[in-house]
Image (cartoon, rainbow, N blue to C red):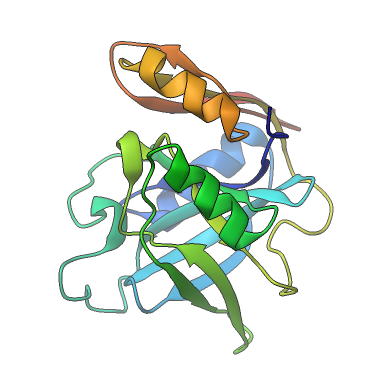
Length: 208
């Protein structure tokens, strides 16, 4: 059995980054860090470190930028409520891990370069699988390699991830291959869901 892949981050999408961050801060008793702008996707984000080089990313439309041709990723132009949309893992080696996913029947597409413009004027660069290809309702994670770049989850944890649970009506088909390539098992449910339970100084909160 392949060793468990490490969680890199969770992606919580929203039509309004500021309002959603304010709500999460009040309910968890935390303070989010500044994120930045992602011009290629017409989005911006804020970051909540969760320890072990992992974090919660709240992503929404960048109101100061036009949507790119074809629309923003993760259907952000049509979303009306905040929700857990996706998650990302770190590879053992990018080529090896992507090969394992492909052998299991999960096609990530090409590896691309991601870029985020930081508030201080610097640019953060990384490699990742194609964020336009959300496979199996988001159950199959993005694979992201920071390749020595400053990791957004570095530093003290502001909150703790108590549980990450994957749910899907077709769980029996997904669970075997998932465990084989180092992902968590998938639990039965009437609808697909990524469920994250977070604990902060102000309490516990489950996002889905």
